[in-house]
Image (cartoon, rainbow, N blue to C red; front, side, top):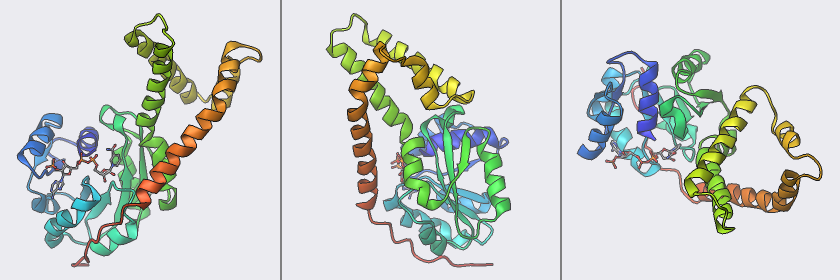
Length: 262
Ligand SMILES: NC(=O)c1ccc[n+]([C@@H]2O[C@H](COP(=O)([O-])OP(=O)(O)OC[C@H]3O[C@@H](n4cnc5c(N)ncnc54)[C@H](OP(=O)(O)O)[C@@H]3O)[C@@H](O)[C@H]2O)c1
């Protein structure tokens, strides 16, 4: 996700203003290739160069990364986590400055998809506005509350993969019935359905309107929706229960305490 966000941010800031760090030679090489405009530094150097630091590591790696950054972090550094499972209160206790949560989504590297911004302790309205200015060039940002994070992430960040999984099941079902379509053609056809759906919604159509326009009473689409409705609803209930259970099963990391409040 770090590469996706770095690629997105590189479209929002001028040359030489995006700094990035990796742990291994392999991750640094991936970073240089994906975001050629980024200045790559050792993690401990980031606070010297950047006022906004986005931590794109897993929860288990956060304590080590914060230990490297902390000696040079001041109350002026905004620190952002991309981890839903990390309470902002815990991050705020571990660093001296303002904190926020940013949930990216997979299209952000090509200028598409949502970003979810959760303002945390010490982040001012002006800071939030500044972050939105950085996010708009590569995403559609939404400011949400921390309590909305799981549900909003299910839809916006897990969403592309969940919809891709649902569409894959749709294509599989046609293939299993022996539909006289190659898999490639079937995927192209359903991709056009997604494209049209997305454009109609962009122009203000509601999901119910689109269903009603296609699924005329007594028609084939209405019959298909009737047949699938209960299973679809059950599948999504199970999916979202699974994300909630998975998140609850992982303890938040112990981050230690911030220093320098100056
Ligand atoms: N995947 C998504 O779509 C998505 C969406 C929203 C939020 N998130 C959240 O983003 C977080 C990261 O997920 P991910 O899928 O991007 O994981 P990932 O592919 O494992 O990437 C984590 C990166 O952190 C680097 N790292 C770990 N410790 C480091 C250290 N001490 N110094 C520098 N770099 C270090 C790793 O380096 P190495 O390459 O050397 O191991 C790796 O490149 C997760 O908490 C996840 O919940 C993910």
